[in-house]
Length: 412
Image (cartoon, rainbow, N blue to C red):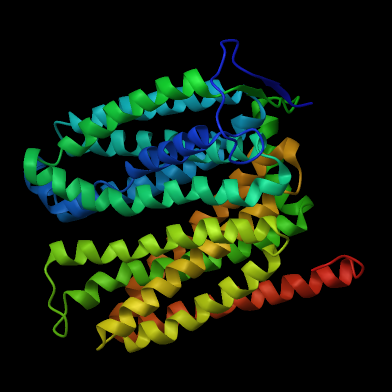
């Protein structure tokens, strides 16, 4: 049984944003997810500066990005299920504090080995962002779940988008280490605030930690909806990552010949996704979650037509990038709403299984991009991304057909 224990100290009245969540608390949770997720992206625009400062090889410097991705995936598997075992406020605060410590480790790194270790450890504990997502969902009324997920996920998305820009700016003023120092301080402040304002929330699963991990894996066998949505999510992120992994190669090429600074600004078109996410959440709250999934997966596929034309046209490239980002965030939001509605008592394990599949798909898309670019250039990349997006749409169609066959009396 869910045991929610509010703070013992009086809390000032505040307008509710979504069934028990004040606007201030929802905003804090959204900002917090963005700050803790941002640390996984700081190094991307700074790799050459880091390489020179620490006297690393190019391949070792590139491993910093890999360490962040691998660490986050590991955290999703090992730490996120703890939300179904431990008191969630304490878990969130500890993970935020630990991330701050590991960022300090990266900031003070004297060599590549320490930086890689700090990056991986900070990425593992940065799954605190996902702990807050499920925390917010647990506090919200079911009819407001979509809006809450959309709001908190908008913060996470913005954190990832702006991290690259901010790290580049701060590096100009105080060196590449500055952004790590600053974020560590901000996360420490956030940890204190979360400790003060979050209610206690304990939903014990009644099993040991090893059993908890096993049960997370078993969910793929016992929850058909999770299987469908995990495949949709993995394919959609794979398609999304194909574009964002390869677009730099296009923009530095002969047709565009952009500088690295301008290329960094191109990433800001992804802010369009922060608009789509809360809109998709509100539509889900009104019963249109499947409609959002269908339109989102169809838009994902169609966006690649514009992206392909973007080889020689900036207008088409921008249009395709915006459509791709809006589609991806809409699909992700609808997937999460479907998953979170399955079984509230195992929500953290469901999220762990879902997000692990999500990021595995993304990593596969990034890996395939290099092959597509070498063999076919932008046309090859567009074909790969379009095929993955079309597969996403077809899997959604198959899921709807399967669901209709199982439950013909239920609304789609």
